[in-house]
Image (cartoon, rainbow, N blue to C red; front, side, top):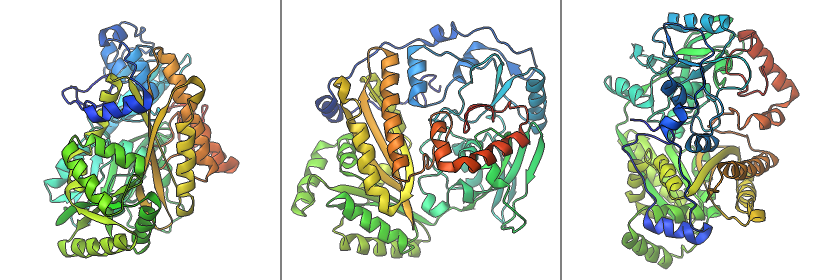
Length: 533
């Protein structure tokens, strides 16, 4: 069964390996283990519902607890401490578009706020109920999960918006197709959520981000229905799909998504290259993407993340041998690991690999074969479970990400890591910080930073530590010209930083568009744009 207060299935664990735990204790100090609230205890605090009875709506406290929060660190702090101030008043599980419209009318008549809910994997507060006197209805789309239509000649597949990653791939694979969208939340996130947050999968360099994969669909809004036909291209005015992409439930509920599937690849492989330092690795990756090499993935860890990854490998003997070999090749403590992927025709993959390794060698790269790539592929959906293990060991972890021009990547990484690394100095606490570049473009790259710090005995203090770190790092991103989000969306946590990025006219445009689709302000208020609109 899925955890109610952490990541993933409760039968799956990823405890912190002994060597990694010893390292954290050396760097941060011994973890602060805190008592956790019980599910029954949290259920006992759920207030009486403020919604009238409806055949499609359950008021069951267990359902309301399970839909009260997502997967952000503030969500974890609230759930694990039992200090959850707000719950939805009811949860609905529509199975048809007509039921979605019926529930919208019900919410409108009840004066309720309506939250679309996909897989609940948001790490920025997309599914959290707002405060206020109005009741809240959460609409879980998980039962609208089937492949409804497939145009095999065009590769256009129509799914119910609640289809999760494994459901999407299984239904396409039966026809020899794939969407190829593999975010780290793949096991639980949904196709509707991917569209609503402009998601990016781990192999987006080959398959594309959601804005390329999303061909059309159907949006049910309080103002009516909007059909988005799947044109291959159109010059008939602005593309209305852009109003749905990244809309975060503010304009309505996406009930169907039409996506561009492709045949399953003939060959796929991932391999590792070590570089003497981050700058040389960055130069190599930039040269690869600007040469338009058809890599499906190019991920470069900085020295701290490379070191941490080796500690997590749980194979100290093999790691020691690798360290000695790399030392002989003049790759010392500042060494950085790049993971490169090739997907597609076998002949093209071979040519791409040769070209990428040629560029890597010209920048001091040391090819170490497929073992690191195979290990990454095996564990790529297991890594999020490490959050559970870290919490149990007494540590909190969070991430933040951005995208910026190549010329700003190093400066931004340095500034963000400095803000995080020194962010708790005044209270005598240390922070472990590491970064990687994971999505690359000809003009720039995404920067993804992870930080770990000790839990405080008081959950409110843990939240205050997170808020201080999150705020200073976000301001550093903005100061270096980065977007506040490359792939996680805006939600609650990033909403304060959106106005400087979009500008006054841009924010007014977004607010006006939301007002057209949702004149009463019932759809997911407080997300994306602070306030009702």
